[in-house]
Every structure is written in C-alpha cells, then in structure tokens.
Image 1 (cartoon, helix red, strand yellow):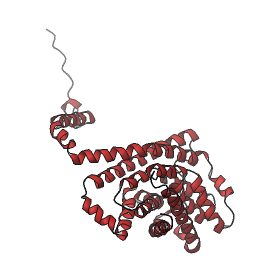
Image 2: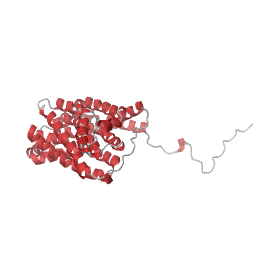
Image 3: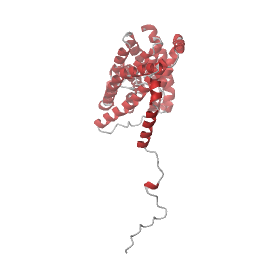
Image 4: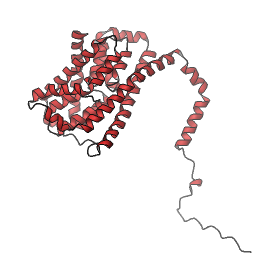
Length: 337
C-alpha cells in the first residue's frame, strides 16, 4: 500500500503559523470585553447615574454642549473657508502701509471675518510670510477668534439677560488685540519671531484643503468643547456651593480664577460663552475676563504659537497677552457692565 506523503519539515528558524502563536488582544476582543464589563456592571452604573449629583452633572453637560455645538460647527466651516479660499495677499493689499495704522485695521478685520483659534494662527503666519508687518498680523491673530460675528452672536444667545456683555466683549477683545500689536511694534524684535513654516494645507487642492481643515478643526475644537462642558458641569455639580461662592465673592480671586480656568480649559471661542454663562456664581466682570483671555491665550494656542512662530516668541507673547487681557477686561467691565 502506498504511503501518504509526509509534510515537509519546517525550516530552522521559521516562525510558527499564526494558530501556534500566543493569543493577543485586538480591537474586537477589547470591544467584547468592554461590553461584557458594562453589561455586568449595569446595575451599579445605573444607580450611579440616578443620583442627584450625576443628574445635575448630566443636565449641565448636555445643556452646554447642545447650545454651543451649532455655533462651533458654523465657526469651523467659515474659518476653514476663509483660510483656504481667501488668499493672504488680500489682507496684505487691504492693510495700510503705515504699521501704526495697520494694527487697528487688522484688529477690525478680525472682528469682521469669522475664524477660530485653530485658523487664526496659520492665517497670521501666512500674513507674516507674505510681508505683512508682524504687529498687524498679531493683532489679527488675537482679534479674529475673540470678537468675530459668530462669537458675538453666541455671546448674545448665552447671555440673553445681559446684552451689554456683547459690547463689552467686543470692546475688550479689540482693545487687547490692538494694544498687543502696538506693544509688539514698539518693543518686539525680529529675532524673537522665527519665519513661519508653510501651512500643511497649502499646496493641496482647495476642496481637499477645505475639508481637511474642517475635519481637523471639528475634532480638535469639539474635543475641547466636551472637556469644557465637563469642567463646567463638574464645577456646578461636585464642587461645594460654599467654595464657589467664596471664590466668587472675592473680586480679585474670582477674576484670577476664571482667567486661569480659561487658559486651562482651552475652549473654542465659538462655545466659551455658554460655559461662562453656566458659572452663575461669578460676576459679569469675572466672566468677561474668561471670555477675553480664553480666545487669546490658552494651552492649545500656546502650543500652536510655539510651532508657528517659535518658542522665544510664545514665551514672551503669551504672558504679556494674559496680563493685558485681564487688565483690559476689568477696565472695560468697570465702564460698560
């Protein structure tokens, strides 16, 4: 009887077939394990979510997110359109040749053209790269995310009982942007500002660049919106009322607390008004400081400014902007609020 042919021996050093290797964790397995954990723990989770604290937390979180999301999406779409379809040479032609006059014109242009922080930094870098005086480009960088039409409309919606907040935010943001531009014009040095690198979307087709910018900014800004809404909800639901009231009753502490909170939360400017409005314990002055500081200097902006203009620039520009924004917001509040 003919014998069956034996399988050839494995070559020395050959890797064992996949079925012989030890099992490893992959995405479907992790997902299955996660679902099993949720299924087994649904009783405790349901009990936790039904507590008054969590009910209050979820109410504030959902309210802030739902109110802010339409403005965030609209702002991202408009800022992407401006960054991609409006050439930087347009701004260079529109600005006066005199740098002192170019600063306020650039600041007003930021108030007219919608743009979030994610768009204003690369646009300002493109302006510098095309020969616009840095002082004017920096004024635009600060004013565009702080006082553009989308931001002011969102502020009006978030503060229906305090319409003066819209004017106060416009004045404080524009004055801070122009003042920083003039300060840079007076004290800034060219060796502090490295030439900005070419933006990642430049050189692509306009359609691809537009949707790439929309996707990036939506994910980026949406993530910070969620973090900001979670922080606001936590402050409202978890932190004892007496603590917040103590901080809010001290004018100096309340202003500094919300200024630092604006830097740490790094909320997109199209959504920050709803977070500020939810902090009902604090005065309008402290909220105006929050709305003035946040769009001009926060953690993500510091990182973007460092990557675009260099660390030496950011280490000088960010602290000066932080201090000046607080001072201008407090003075504006004393006059308008």
